[in-house]
Image (cartoon, rainbow, N blue to C red; front, side):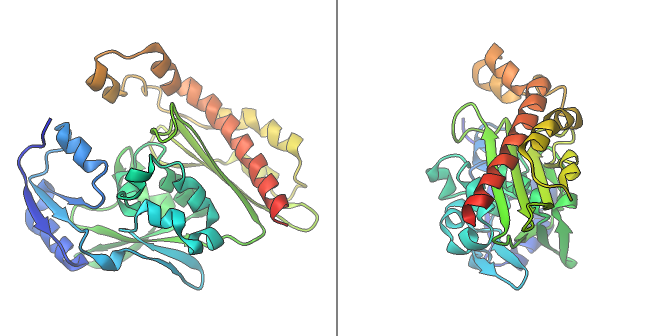
Length: 312
């Protein structure tokens, strides 16, 4: 199919983009990498009357080290992040997550800002942002505002970015050399949309006492937002022990609450084939994702521990 007719608007600065979004209102839409938007337009799932192209805003394409964070411009391509030495040195879990995003052709075009604003279920950047408590810088008619990852995602494909605002920068906290990390996914095939994604970080003191532990999951929340697991907090202050970690699996499975209507909402399957296959239904079910989330969480913590020990 072809997209519905639309007008093409070029923005060469953030202020240009905000002005265009204000002028054309709800009928306008930003295009960055276009890897998701163009597909939706071709399928007539999205029908914006005005497309505001922000690819000319080169000031939004960067990876910078600050005193307390790794600042990444919203127009930075996945491939740039994947190859960045700054990312590898100061936030390596981000590189690990990017390796799971689609295929290299898409990673060469797609942007971190576009992925975060789209907020697709299980999307890699959102899980890492929630895990690390990243901060989102959003520009609008009233100036800039900074929103923590915990308040950025609202529901499936919805964030707090308003129709006349632009996400400009993402600030990820720096990981110390004493932090182990891991990122895992369950997908039908490598590069496909995650069924469940999991990220973990782990910090130990010299006696292997857990000083910080975090796990975040994608596509397991009924609200459609990246989810921080509470059960792992039980490990804080205790000596890291694989048996203790394995005992958390049932707690995590009980804690997560996937959307029970996930199968019915898998509309893309019906659109493409008209048939919802049994195997797809099983993989998308809430029961499957609860179990997978628990298993991945435990596995991610174990890998983070092994990675931390290997780095010493």
